Amino acid sequence: MTIDKKTIEHLERLARITLRDDEVEPLTRELDRIVRFVEKLQSVDTAGVETAKLAPQAEEARLRTDEAQAGLERDRVLEQAPDAMKGCFRVPRVIERHDEH
Image 1 (cartoon, rainbow, N blue to C red):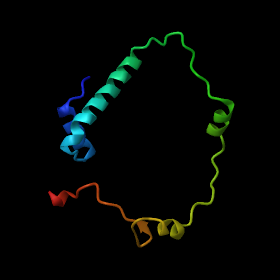
Image 2 (cartoon, rainbow, N blue to C red):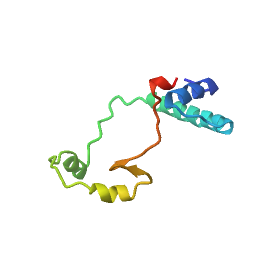
Image 3 (cartoon, rainbow, N blue to C red):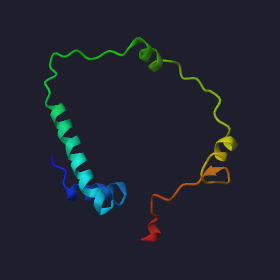
Image 4 (cartoon, helix red, strand yellow):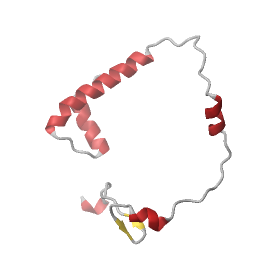
């Protein structure tokens, strides 16, 4: 798979972002390098390679019991938020409403 400008434009639409003209070429090169690296990794013959095992500490952490714990205090967390209203975080809209088209 080759990453080209058309692919980047498609990714822009999917991610709902807009890249500046000077960002397109470096991103195209970088993503192309990443894709070629992943393709190279996929071509490695791993037949006969034993599956890695987790370290004992990681195994214990992964299998610990799921117990409820006290959470953070809402007001204290919201004091640190850049924008809050009526006890909630306010963030920029990222999804358009259907009636705005």
